[in-house]
Image (tube, rainbow, N blue to C red):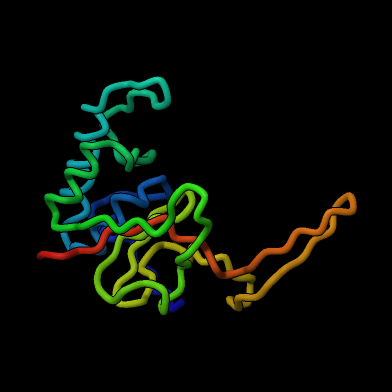
Length: 169
């Protein structure tokens, strides 16, 4: 999949270094809205969410991850004009990969394992390429035998759990 380096306006907003703000960056890239505006809204949501048995209460920051399963986050994405499309269910296995031919055209915020990335018309826009390709950027397959057990997998075909597609501007 084609890759374009894009920090979503993070450096222009005065932020430096690396942090866990992939949700904020992805939304900024997909919507074209200013980084600081999205960051502030996500930080506010994080600060207001209640602590649960499975998630701790987070401070007013969006730099260390966002719990995207929370109702406030889903409502926020809907308010921005996004619609959620699930591509995987319990026990269904991976049906959609981070491959241009398997994703629709448009402005997407794509959910993969432990990361969210923006995909615009089949081009990944992020600070790194989240595809699981080898160092040459070529997809392929691998096999490993450990204790007599053979394991096979693919390189470059990262599973997409679902995506938000921008339906309105």
